[in-house]
Image (cartoon, rainbow, N blue to C red; front, side, top):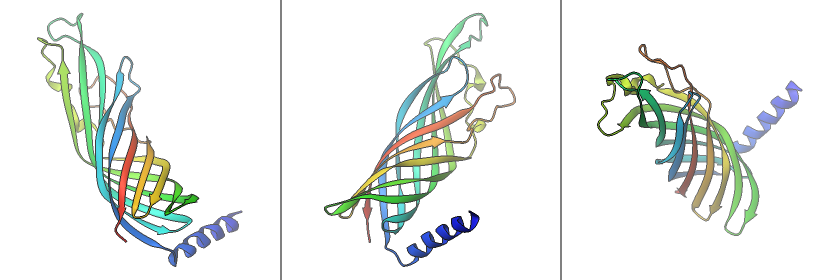
Length: 213
């Protein structure tokens, strides 16, 4: 079985050595939702963006590494005790935005040929290098928020995800719709934190690319 698997891998990459090579730039819109396993947290999706480039090696089967800068905001709502009266709860809304360089390496398959292009499927792992995490906190009017409620340093600066989706190529344009499933826990509990929790970012992408060659 190991020999057969190795033979398939060697055949796949050998066939791409002499295959078509395309380079392009891309941009798109993201819709991300930050999910948390902390009790009484309400999650909401927010829109962001991505800008970058890709290389496609191959034809019917292809390998597509990419690199792009992306903004993935998410929103959570929860209740927390008042500073003046611990028995009183008030609502807090946090918008957390991760800005990162994302590096997906996708394996694709041409599903169907169409006039002037094709329809394909793609999937693969994504490494994200977070360059900035911003937290915007909004509380109820007239309520002072605790000084430690903003905690951008409590999030990881590197994480893993998995992408899968479909795309359409028409002449020099390439259009992709993908879903990114967060695999890493983004949250590192601060020293004064009271909640152990897991935060993951799940994202929908709609992007348009231009194949330069």
